[in-house]
Amino acid sequence: MTSERRQPTIAVLAVQGAFLEHEQRLERLGCSCIELRKASDLDQPFDGLVLPGGESTVQGKLIDELGMLEPLRCLIMEGLPVLATCAGLILLAREISDDSTSDPTRSPRLATMLVTVRRNAYGRQLGSFHTSQDFSGLGEVPMTFIRAPFVEQAETGVEVLARVDGRIVAVRFGSQIAVSFHPELDSCDAIHTLFVNEIRV
Image (cartoon, rainbow, N blue to C red):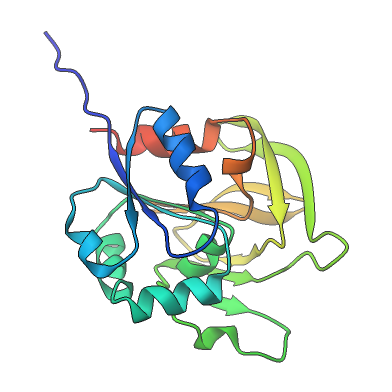
């Protein structure tokens, strides 16, 4: 007789950005969600973490000011499974490449993934667009990009999961999965299901 697997509890960073859409998708897949809004929220037990899209600079500053930056970094470095989308990818990136006059490297980030990311990489003309492309192990999935970054360089140990027009838009590093696009905005559950299946206990 096999024991029934427990559905995971997922912590969703909820200080800014499109976190509700992730929660709705995860709950539809049978998960429980908790929102991370302050440091004490980290005292609750959870099995995985979602870093949503939004404004990466704002998110980075808020999680630093709220006392969540270092605790989250430690949890991720210890192997906590993460799904990061758009701005979340920027928060995870070890390096940022940007040709603007501002210096995005000054913004607090988790910096746990060995990638270099370019912010707002598609410019105004392609600031938002939709496509369907092959995703490693999942086949073709819909991808919605909104002022999206892409990965300029993936270091040794980082698995490239998807490309669009030759540019890297999805990667995996250890227990971290990060994508440039917004899977929570499409009807396809493939990305969230991949994440949930990897952490279900």
